[in-house]
Structures are given as structure tokens and as C-alpha cells.
Image: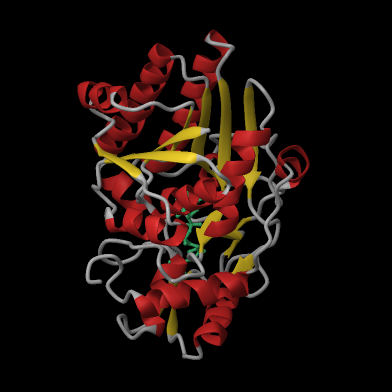
Length: 338
Ligand code: UFG
């Protein structure tokens, strides 16, 4: 299959490019590089030995999207492109709604006019808002307790895709709700490259271990969890990438929906311990107030993806810590200075 990856130069997109190529597919990447670096695609080429076609374009711009996608042939789309920083979305709601919704509308328009009928959408466990139960399965209500515009753009994009699919039944649309992607490619060539201060736990911990930041602030120590700190379902990005390949091959026809997670939760302090062990270095931390909008616990029930997609996580938290540390050590400045 020839697969278009929107936002394919980013963290999850670039790892998915590797998995798709290794499974024998061709990939075309479109990315505006607003929060990524085309060096990631050179690394994909280095890992796979296969050239990646790259088109630089902002898909939120209708004419740019149409022009960019006219130049290439593809039979399926994996749509990652979008803004993703939760706190920034609270500060800049218009930018988030405009970029994340327009991009999806334009991708769907182009697919429709080109008769491309297979879509996989990069959604998020954030659509479950403040979860009523854990582990969370796909029947859990969506939208209740979403606390930020980023989360709403994921929920709204899911709704847009549902509505388009019911008006256009030939469209096979798969919504993948990711839990917490972490880790890096085991080669040390690809990994997460946040601009500025990392928002997410594992890249922050990696920078503390490397001595780039003094100490981690642990947001909240009084949650109703094993040790009072927030619990999440961390999924190795290589497993997550494999989930996209499985979805392209095995998803149920029509509209389908899958959680991608491991089913296991770890607290912030358990992640710190695991990282210290993997890196062989201390990760100093201090307890800090809860981060607004955070939930105590978010753990996937991945049973549907396990049975229908024939997919399950294979890697553990310790693999993710080892690979994130390898990436951090080999690329202290991310893709920028290599
Ligand atoms: N945390 C800290 N200190 C930090 C960063 C995070 O203690 O410096 C804690 C958080 O409070 C939370 C846990 O580490 O308990 C994980 O936080 P992340 O920011 O890594 O991840 P989130 O669960 O907040 O968010 C992630 C993605 C979102 C997505 C959401 C879905 O970043 O894009 O999962 O649940 F929407």
C-alpha cells in the first residue's frame, strides 16, 4: 500500500513511517515542520534503507493542501498533523481549533475528491475527559470533563470523521485513541524532540537525568493512587507505530475505534524509578501542586485492539526508559545539532 502520513515528521509519525516501510509499504510524508524537523525523515531513511518522499505543506491551508496532495499518489492516509500542546491550547484556542479542524477538513476533502477511502486518525485518550472508570474501554462516554481546547479538537475531529463516514460509507475510518506514548526507536536515531521545556513526563525526566534540567516537578502527590502521584498507561512508541500498521490491515470496515495502550498503569514516581535504573543516574524531583486539568488515573482496556487488530504491546516501561535514554544520550539537542 502507498500511505500518506500527514504530520509524518513528528514523533509518532516518523516511528510509524519506519514500521510501515518495514512491513513493505510505501510512505509519503506531508508536514509543515512547524513542530518537527526533516532530519527525522533522514533518520527514517537511515534505519530502513528506503527513500521517503517528503512534501512540505501546511494542510490547514486549503489551496496548499490541494496543491501538495495533487502531486502524489496514495491509497490510504494516516492523519497525525496537528498542534498538540495541552497548556498552549488553553492560551491559544483559536489557533488550535483552526489548525486542527481545518487540517482534518482539508484532508477529508482531498480524500473524497481523489477517491481515497482509507483513513486512520491519530486520536487520544484525552477524549475520555475525566474517566469514570479504569481501565477505560471504547464504550466509555466521550467529552465529559475535557479540560482544554487540544482535547476538544480530538473529540471534534472524531465527530467530523464519524459524520463524513456515515455520509460516505465507502470510507473506512479508524480512530486510534492513544494513551501515553513514550520511548524512542531502539537505534537511538529517532525519538521525541520537544521544542523548549518539555510538557510531558518522560522527555522531562530524560533531560533531568542528562543534567539539562535541575529537577522534575511531580505534579500532585495526593491523588487516590498507589503512591499519591498520577497514574498513566505508557505505551512504547514502537508498539504504537505497529498499531497503525495493524489498523491499516485489519480494522473493521466502516467506522472503527480502538484504544492503543498496554492496560498497565504506572505512577509518576514509578516512572522516575524505572528511568533512574535504565539511565544509571539519579533523577532529582520535588513534589509540586497538581497540574490543572490532570486526572488521577488513565489506563486503557486494549482488549478490542488485541482481538480485532491482532495487535498488543510487546515492550515494557523499562524498554521505553532504556530507549528514551539512549536517544537522549546520543542526541542531547534532539535533531538540531547532529
Ligand atoms: N507530570 C509531572 N511532571 C511533569 C510532567 C508530567 O509530574 O513535568 C505528570 C503528570 O501530572 C501526569 C503524568 O506525569 O500525572 C503524565 O503527564 P504527561 O504530560 O506526560 O501526559 P498526560 O497524561 O498529561 O497527557 C498525555 C498527552 C496528551 C494526551 C493525554 C491523554 O500528552 O496529548 O495524555 O490522556 F491528551
